[in-house]
Picture (cartoon, rainbow, N blue to C red):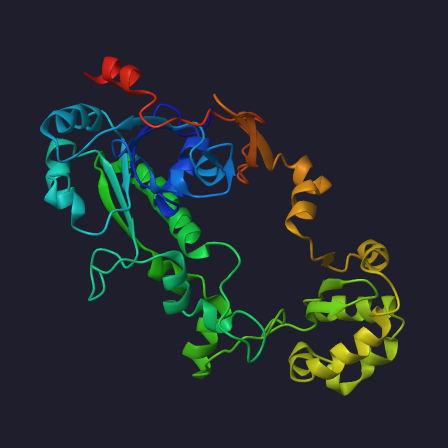
Length: 380
């Protein structure tokens, strides 16, 4: 891929999701990524479903355009190969348990002596410091510990996991942001740095309204279904055939919504005159709205609301989201290629840049150790 990170070499020691997601972003932005995998086993996610023939679609969705070499970092011969690649790397990304690479002689304090310009990023469950740093963590563990699951789901429901691995993905995104900032800093100082990202920290960082509510009011938020705790109306409403999301985030939009629903009397009703009052009386307001909304289909209401610029939309399933014309227009479904199964479709890159084309075709999916000879020829 051509992009702003072109000519940068990323040494990718990651597996499963948090690290591979980060390095996929770097690859999509133009960096060359050499993925170092365990011999014979490879990235754990090569064994994760769903499968296309015997190839993991999970692995393929995260590792397009990367090169693969299998190295055992406990083996002296393989370590010599790794050292030669590392000497030319700009960025190293790893998501081992803290202290693992130190045991193998590749901790930050060891590596920076030989490569002081290296940007070394570590993403782990709990970070490199603190009482929990040695504990393992998966996405759902940090969703629970980070408070996210306590505000997800319907009131009085069982604990509900967010429907995507947001614990891993947010950590991957924050790691990529940290690397980008470190690259800019290196331009000024000529020095690399160590980046420490904790999955749990990332969950705390994205709690927004919930954490603001607790820290300012000492309130402990609870699940509210689709309802927003501070804006109303701002949730899912029943229609004749499904649900519609309506997000009228200010008085002007509320007034426009009431006009569209032919309920202008609500505008002057003291219970609904301000956003704060609407939040206090949202259950009553929802009941009034749904008595009207239930008379038409979601698509019909969207056709009524959209010309008035009232923020609204359907609740799409994955098929509908992927096949949506806006998704297609934004090149958010791209193609890659695998030697055995041929063409494979996957999610695109949401970062669109004016100086670079957002290509529809991405780099191929690497087999385990596929690029060994090419890498050995180049670096040894």
